[in-house]
Amino acid sequence: GAFGAWSRTPAGERAAVLGRAADIIRGRLGEFADLARAETGATTATARAMQVGVAVARFRRYATVEPAEWAIPPQINEAGPMGKAGVMGALAVRQPVGVVSCITSYNNPWANPAGKVAPALAMGNTVVVKPAPQDPLSVYRMAEALEAAGAPPGVVNVVSGRSTAVGEAAVASPDVDMVSFTGSTAVGQRIAEVCGRDMKRQLMELGGKGAAVVFEDADVGSAVAGIGTTFSFYSGQICTAPTRVLVQRGLYDRLVDGLAAYAGRLKVGDPAAPDTVVGPLITAEHRARVESYVELGRKEGATVLTGGERPQLERGFYIPPTLLADCTNDMRVAREEIFGPVVSVVPFDDEEEGIALANDSDYGLIDYVWSGDVARAFRVARRLRAGGVGINTVGRNMEAPFGGFKRSGVGRDVGSYALHAYSEVQAIVWPG
Image (cartoon, rainbow, N blue to C red; front, side, top):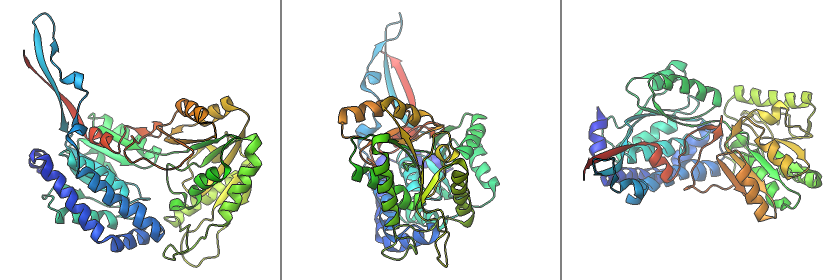
């Protein structure tokens, strides 16, 4: 099909398609942001900057791939002894994987698929995108932009539907060589089972229960602001959020008071309103799930300091910013991914206990450390079992490898790492 011709297309021509797609999307940013807001409930500012805006940046990033980013470690490319027969020349090169099935998450229907499609196409793969059933229209618009930018027929394909059979086919099809999935750990486990039948390559970014380890010498304002993004950013529907806050006892009361005050200042309401900070959740079903966790927290002995009750708004599936204090690390609200604007706070005594509690989790996507002692912050970060660690920040470096330990996923992407993820390494040898 389309893979053969596209994989042989010069890399510069493939990159030019991505660059033109970025320009097309940027030219319709307002329109596409309105669509993202309507589909997801994200605020206008978030839809513009963090959904459509990030998608533009990702297409542009892979439209300017440097030759060095294809590189294999130099020593592999050097000729070396190959047994008694003498010296053989050897070269390691990158080849596209083939047809990549990109299964995307509902919380970010622009940035997430762009982060899969752009590097996959840059490396010469073709893609079949299966969008989340809650918000497929944004993905169709992205595919249309790629078509208008010159992507040949069959290079970018979209298959949508609510039936689980659609997702199963996107994984099990013998025409698919790799699955790139963002979503829940439970679905990721099912995908891994199906991929194992014929050894399909996998790249999976799954759930998270990010631990924020806050020491007594931390800047309280910075910690409150960083952790407080869980309440507001996508209404907590992000796997990278610091939702499990581990606080050294000497700072516990101040941090909890700060988070409660922060949550109380956040405007909940219509995502189209310019002063809204917290929009609705994606569906009524998901709201019910988040509410069930808040009630479970009460039953487990947590103290609901803020939130927990539906705001009196006519339309939308809203949950106010909710703070669960007095938690222990064995409570389900501290162990399971809630995926809403809910933060659980757990006290600890010393550095060793803080590290142990942070690592006592099935997840390991991104953890966080707040401390005024930089040496300690880096020391603790190296001992956390997570794919990424933020020190005194919740910001992301878009060139840093992204992915999880444990049940938070398999593989790494973002930046050059995505080019590696969507390629195979081939060895070529010849007589010296």
